[in-house]
Image (cartoon, rainbow, N blue to C red; front, side):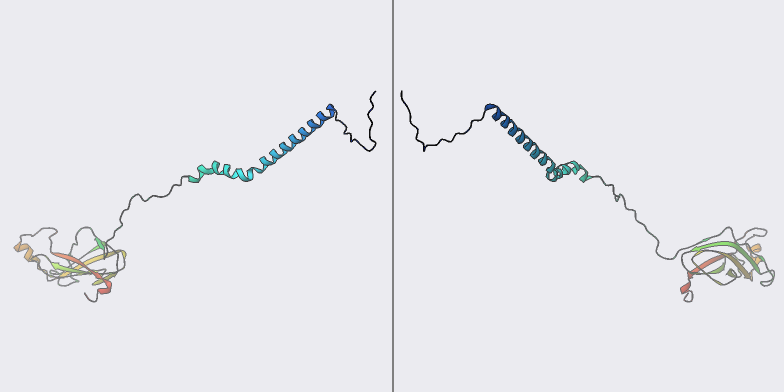
Length: 206
């Protein structure tokens, strides 16, 4: 028989062995904890993404709206506007002035008078009008005219209604009867009224 002696000063540290069942439970628990940690980290990463990725996504989503259509007025055509620079006046009347013998003007058989009312005058300036009358037949005569009973009439811009009157003396009606064989004729042209105009500011120079 062989005996082995053991020195009393030698010590052995005995590490208890884990049984297989305990080890497997510990590993499963560690795996679960690790899995939960990974899931938590992933969730935090997803929550944190909008702070960085949402801007890019939003820009891409709204980018088509950066170039929206705006309708504006377009200069299609130019048309010039013109006017006549200067004085403008228009006179409108109907018919002729018919005269008759008038003893208030002079001798009854050689004096004549007649008027036309409702003569319309339009002007764009202050105007002064007068009526000059000239004889137009062998009857001759001394003719004169008035506008609204005055020799010179001042009117303002716009529309004015006037009355034109003429008078004549020394008219030799016999010259029409003998020389031109117009005895018994109607509406014989014996004189012409000339309506004269000048800007009122210059009437004293005319």
